[in-house]
Amino acid sequence: MIASTQTNHPIAGVKNGKDQTPVEVACYKLKEAGLRITQPRVAILAALIKAGRPTSIDALHSELGPKSCDIVTVYRCMAAFESIGLARRAFLINGTSLYEINLGDPNRYHVVCKDTNQVEELDDASAAELRRAVQTVEDTLRARASPTSATSSSSSASPPRSAAPRPRPRCRRSRSARGR
Image (cartoon, rainbow, N blue to C red; front, top):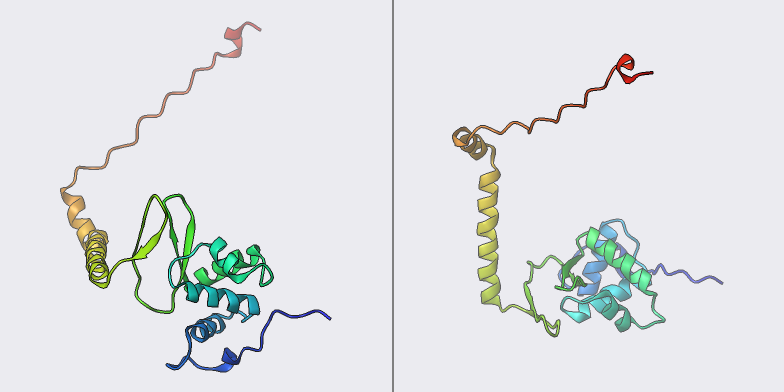
């Protein structure tokens, strides 16, 4: 008999409520996005929530154990979770992707030690200050990109340069000059 990985999870028909566990909320988001709730997905979500901080796919796979699912399934599930906004991806300086669960909380900021790759979350005060700074930069960039500021700045700017002249094509000699 072939075993199905789809589960008859009790959360399948439940609306998003306050008394749900984080795994139940995540499963609700999967269902809301039109994705099936499978045993590997539930196990990966549980491991991601249990980690509580940005985690690599290799670390998630080792947390799940070899009999739970293969590493390709973890990669595919994390890509699906990221595409629906259920997971956030960050990168270490060496290019390693780290994933973190996103259950609607505000973005959390982390610092990474370059020597040990240890990830630590910023304290609340520093995170709030960083959020304000990021918001200020975003507002400034939006103001620069608005159509009203683009027209006013273009009138004072120098006229656009014309394209560099193209090189002239080489002249061909006529047949009579080539000496048949």
